[in-house]
Image (cartoon, rainbow over all chains, first blue to last red; front, side, top):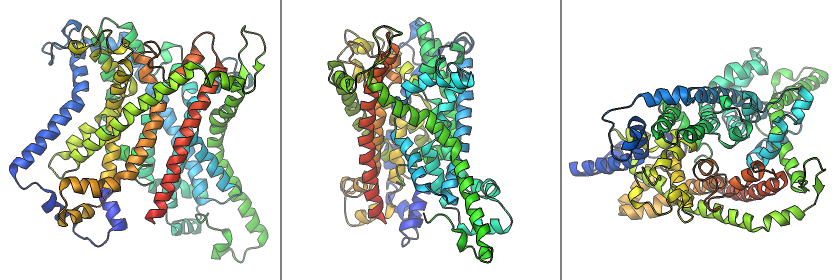
Length: 306
Length: 311
């Protein structure tokens, strides 16, 4: 609804009472109409939720009761503690959180700094450098993995120069993703919306660029920063290929790879694997519920506004 | 760019000597570069360097025995890999997978979005449910559906073909597509919803006043206005489909009989199966890049035109 408001404010100023008009026209005329609408919505909602529901059920029943019980009459809660400790899901989740946290913070910082330079500063080759940032969006991650894997390995140049191997470390999982061309682009758009007068006022008050960025620009761009943070969280949390390639030590594996491991080691006890899957959903489910608006903004940033 | 203020435009600085103004400009440029440096270092090391290196790798063949120097074979390796039956099979499987997942995914997402685009009490709950699969990752969805497809204990065991879904050359890719469509449903719904909400209600109502029925309103008003969103979803969805990996790794590992070996999995296999063949992986990655690039260019041109049209 807020999106509609934005569009209305921007493009269609003549109609001043859209809410009232919609209410009378769009509302169903009969009570039965309302009933059918709710029924249809509910049926579809059940279909969408069904796989998740069955996973919850299957995580709580004995393995031989799969597909026979659709409600856990005798819930086996121990599957969750089995998955958490014996299945190492607790540890996998911890790893995912650490890596995701580093990536989100890193991306927010590098993107904010770069976006500020692009939006508020003037320097030679600015346009070229901006195109360099955008070019990163064109390069799929798959084309970089072969060399990146070499770079972080024991025989890679990082080890030669700095004497540290990033393979099987949190650093190796996170460092390649500490910068984002998409984020810099998104934030630059938001920063360009900051009124120029504010910059003049701030400079009259003796604010330097860094203080102006921290005290004025960043607070004003908070909604976009939040959207970027949620978007970064989601993509970092869901990474699969890189964590699979760059870790061999089970103690460092993220939850996505851990789930595969859990499935392979519990081929008989599926319920434990399902408990693990549910445990892996919970962080994102909470994120989705709390930051729904930011999530939608982040995911649709490129689509609707163009 | 119009975005930045030229120092000379600031009234307070008119009286200052040229010398100071130039120093100020230099300092501004210095600050600008230092703010870009952190991101540029990461991009340089982990995106641009490996990107360029990949083309060098692609022209070098791995020696048959470790320890021997790598052989520069020029473009021969491109011909060998891209002309091989394996590559053409992988490409075809990937295209087929995109055709199975992208249109269906968008249509279902649009259906959900239309369903949720009503002014009803409690509609927010349904919206949350419809977007709920965003909370599942590829790995979670794969593990969930793994049992569903299981021939002994899965819910679909009564209709399970022999060999069962994930081991059946005719079914495995379809099974993977189903998992993928479900997992992306939430994202598709969110995109289509945002697109629908951006359409001014007045336009649809005007058509209603003019006597257009529900189908005609959808066909002649909503759908054309939604086309940029749909187009975006098609392009991004296709790029996503070409990068599919996790569900294959968890559910089929490219099998049965290589029937689910999409391009990304072929790259992974070239890297991970002994003996590793980085040269082959590099050529495959370039093919993937070329396809993605064409799609992105296509999208950018279209978006540009759209922006001009609107303003």
